[in-house]
Length: 113
Length: 118
Image (cartoon, one colour):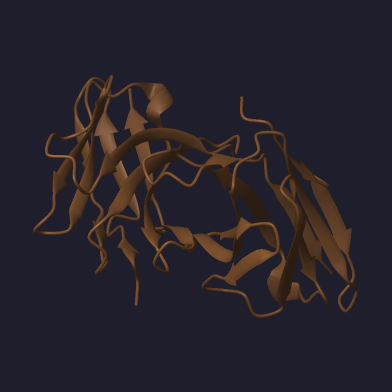
């Protein structure tokens, strides 16, 4: 199994509070991604990183920020959580080569009440 | 615009029969990769098969094959001899370059829920 860990695995938080989700890898992969999964929408890309301090927005980045200060960690922050951000969040990692698959974390179930 | 389109929200197949899950994609890049993932009810994402845009042969992995039609921009997954354990969500994904020599991103379709009936 690829060495990728998401924390926490489950979280319930109140509307308006900041939340940070962590993705940690031990594979030294260059690319890291954050997705959210909602019924009927599949996996939607929030933000991704192609190196330390190199990040870019995905298709649903509003309300989210990310940071990558080390190769192994990619943090996703909800500055002020809203109920629409209730979702399952997945982190993924991959090498640069286009023909290698991405490996996924186990997911974080976030509920904003 | 949707980059990956999976037009079948749900599919049903009888055990031991073959099933095709559709995927079309949209890109102007010449070099890209296409992937299929399986997500069982337990939630983990399982990589199934990969097809590169320059690969002339269709990819195969055991009971999985990818019917790649580049001109039509389609990358359908074919599962032969379906098993009950194949019941899951299936996602098509594409990896493409965002900038020259820079970043790449991996985008997914909305998925197809496959149910295998005994």
